[in-house]
Image 1 (cartoon, rainbow, N blue to C red):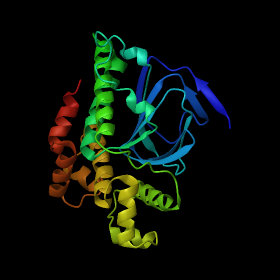
Image 2 (cartoon, rainbow, N blue to C red):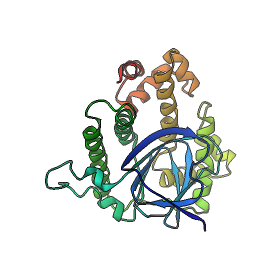
Image 3 (spheres, helix red, strand yellow):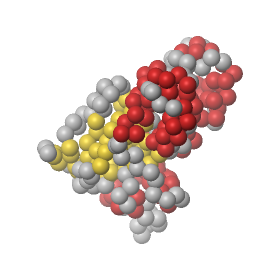
Image 4 (cartoon, helix red, strand yellow):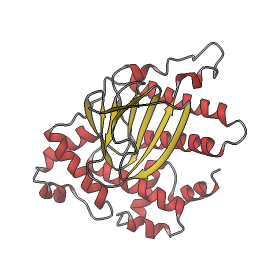
Length: 281
């Protein structure tokens, strides 16, 4: 197996939508990595195990741990990659870190599933870090350290609050679910129902619902709404089309339903979200 070594940056973060990994070979580095899947579905090989991930998955990869990302579906995915060395945080607190926020990297549990609200929280932290890292305003470095500590503390608490999370290692059941996830990611703008999906993939509705939630951490409806809201957020932030047009384009049949689900996921109405996105930074 070809394995490459990379020198890690003291701190690096970026967010990108792409079709394939920029590091196709198995590799490792002398720093810590946090990988967050914003949208899409991928397979991640970490320390000899394969993990199927859908949007909202968070990977924490220890230094010198061999890993590789594979996008077998060939569809676009969006991800945030954060890389850092522990020394970056050393002077954040006098006397060292008050909480062992690095403990999660040593637990052998690299895969964390986030709820919709947890995704919104994590994405806001990533967004702030990217802004600081790219624009480098006055005081950006201590602010980056503070934001990184917040993220690591969130992960530390998340992992400590629950037993070892189900780690979705590839098997025949999950492969079927993964095919369904990929179908949803490509057809979220169409009408999707449990019955339709069950017929298309030759699986009973009850078994489908059970295995889908076990594999993804979401019910079918929650996952479809999650995909649609993420796409709506992009269109609201980057365009000027009417909210009703965006709602229809991402698969909602009712503007009222869209507004209610959008607020459940983000805490804001679509218009308020657009206004805040336009004012941000």
